[in-house]
Length: 324
Image (cartoon, rainbow, N blue to C red; front, side):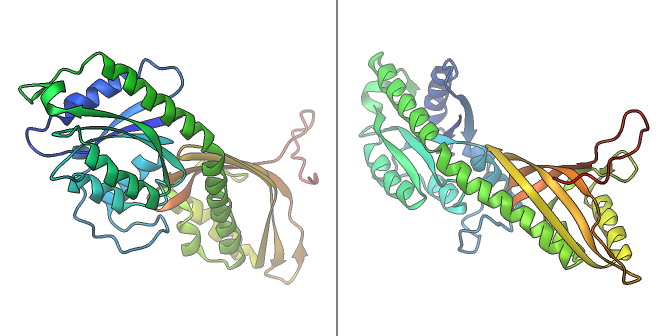
């Protein structure tokens, strides 16, 4: 599990960085998850400018970067102050910018403020419900009057460590329990992307295919050279196929997909077949196909693929007649 500790204040003179470091320093000693600190100062999002929708496709580069950061985590601990009986606007804005990347994950809360930040968390729980984040019941509340020297220097009582450990326990447990749900949704997204590859080939649509590959994709195809680097090189390979075939068909059989965080691997058997330019039909050959995908703010894209055939060690001949 990878848990993001989200520091929800960016205002000058904040004390939240002290609280977030305290959470992170306690968390990294655990052996049941990886913890990463996410400071919203490192993600300066504009006031919500994305069009409404839940597709996971974003037009602003800053949103895409934020979406990838959220997508990489399996759960979250929100470190939040309370401003005028509510949560910080910058945190609400960050949560509103993306949607599917939050879904099916767990959320816990460490709050601070005049009343320990409790009222901020009350509102955050409502937001989490709308984002399909499972908020855990335990929380850490840190009143400025008792947990901060001169209301500025964070000096928590020893009892707060037990409260923090309980929050972390629940976030990790719920993130783990929800992993089957997340992987199911992610696997469906991966299969949709590979279906888009099949549709693009059958339609001989290079521009549609472009959207399925990362700009820096590295492809190990059956044709030389040893590697094709970049989306233009990959599309050039498919364009060559389109010059040979009048009508293209592509099959992907026995596909298995595994997902972890924002990375996915798929493997199966692929075959290009169809009608050649001279009208001759061909069944093509089956190859072993492997795909590596990364989730970005625009959804899943292929960062690496490989097609290969076994060969006879004695003769060096490719075994192109094999079938799955």
